[in-house]
Length: 187
Image 1 (tube, rainbow, N blue to C red):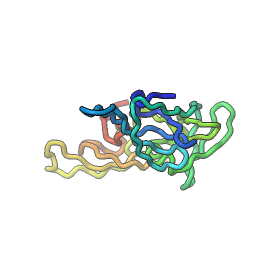
Image 2: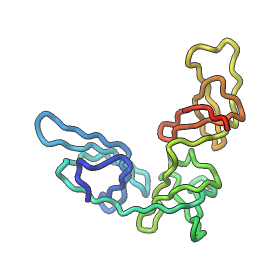
Image 3: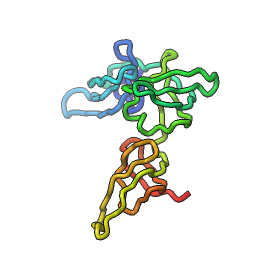
Image 4: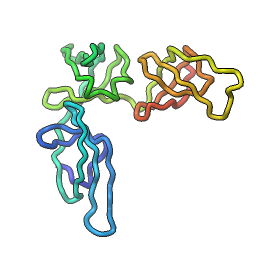
């Protein structure tokens, strides 16, 4: 059980018997009346979004989730396929559940898979990941206005806005929460 005021982004709550991930959380303390928490929740099983307002004095059930390491194998269009690192069992997670996370995952990498009642419901990825640029258009001579950017494609197919000096083959660090370029990496 969690108090309404203790709800944090990234928590899993049990609402109507289904696990929901807290995607956004806003604490509101009006001048009159009781404080409350406004939450945007994503159903961990089917990806549907729910908005809830919870009073700080109310309690909400936390979903009993646990993590396990699994290797990302491939995507077949509708499902992401993983293999448990300990038991070598293979399982899949619907693409609708991993819509945002999936575009940052690299085949063959190991990730933390979030489980609820033996069902995989999500994947935890690092906040920043280094990718190799697979396709970058050439910078146009004279296009050196402060802050000029171009769109490049990285090895996973993700498109990222980067400064114009980035070339094909460069390694860049990308923020997985925002999808934004962070820096060029020299390895």
